[in-house]
Image 1 (tube, rainbow, N blue to C red):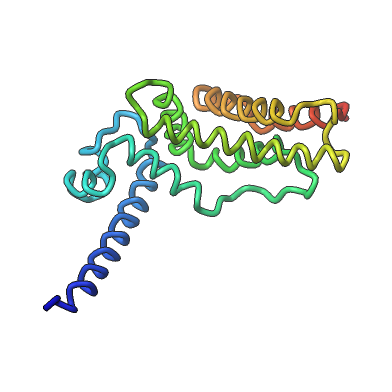
Image 2: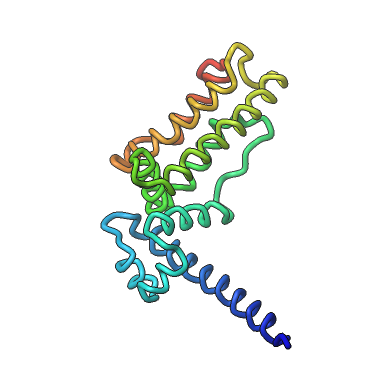
Length: 203
């Protein structure tokens, strides 16, 4: 006869496992927001997070998987981005994100590390993450551009897909420049791109 108590115990262990994984992610986000991903190993992260190396490996498998999950989880959380008007272009949205990201340089550096890893053949997790993210961003931004063109807020002679690719390239490239030199005005450059997309002359 089957043990009817096995299923509840199994469910309880599963829920505890999910909660424990989330707890580790929460602490890891704090660590990465403070120090970025430089000189990082699973053992070093485990020590800073306050868990064993075995526990970190159990929940995330590899350093690459942990980095991806930390970034994804950080993006699910509410940000301190400034509110935007209804007619804001995607370039303005990226500018608002850049402004908020100045408060979390470690996570910005983590993102740049993941994208750099994705270019290499031996990092399939980072490659899948970056490829999927760029594809979704291009699709979403292109849809926004089409809507803004139809409402007269963006020039209609521009290809929406190419505009999307350009906005992403500008945002990511400026972000890397800012990491290397904090005097680079990421937000202002994207706001200038916004004016170019609208065909608006400078004031």
